[in-house]
Length: 360
Image 1 (cartoon, rainbow, N blue to C red):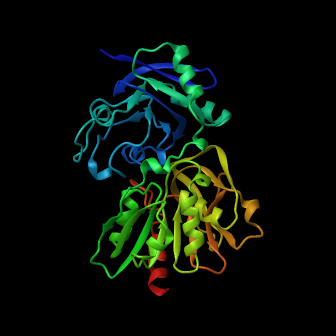
Image 2 (tube, rainbow, N blue to C red):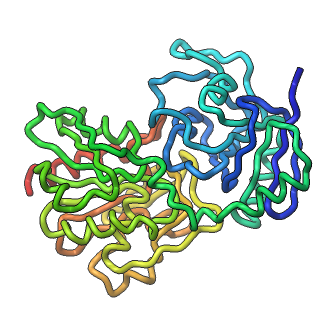
Image 3 (cartoon, helix red, strand yellow):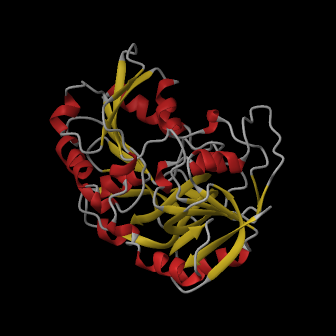
């Protein structure tokens, strides 16, 4: 028997659908992603902490679930909204179905939703606070839960997803980087390991002096969830070590690096989430298709008199997609070059950074 589920939005909208996954109630910011594939990677991406994820592609779960595709130790999104849940997945690596996957991590799902209409609503009005229930609850009570939750800009989400103790990978390599963990994805770690660069993952609030104790050849400021202005320890790390080592940033990492050099950040109306975002490199004129997941971005007007320059832009809205420092070995990208299942147009940015640390 199909159980009823409800989704309440802060504007008063109540949507009813079919529940799957875990029987519970979750709140979060409702956002949409346009990827046709990659639901496992998205759900396990720490950058989705605090958010209820909706996919615009109507069928989800069709190729099942494999731990090979996890980007962390489990689901980080607060809930999942789909048009249709596939009940009979088919893939040689599949270990379980979508509903079982959500249940394992106590996450609710709702199907039978007109995701096209809901996407249009979010595009028109912006990302909204929501509450998703797979339990019995009055509409008014669920709506109050949606409205009364704190805004995502007021929550310290990075602290909920970063490591608590150092983790070391590939300690037999001659070179290593430190990853300042704001919500690192497994693919980012693996991108360096396959290039014979060891990785030390440290909590985002590690003292810069302790970072240097690991004798790194470079630093990566990782991707992660929430408002970058709340991640002050990582901003301080960039400021403290900017003249000592090459530094590279991904997604939230770009925003943190920009803040360290005096830029301003603003919250986007509905953000960029999906695997089809066009990015133009301003140096060579090339255009790449990229995977993205962010709701904040750098204000380009705020860096016109700073020492950081915009190197890449989003062709949909002109927002900054890459920056570099005029004098120091510091650069970043707003998109995810490590993204699974792809696209892999920009995988070479890891080669560029590795070459930079080897020549530094």
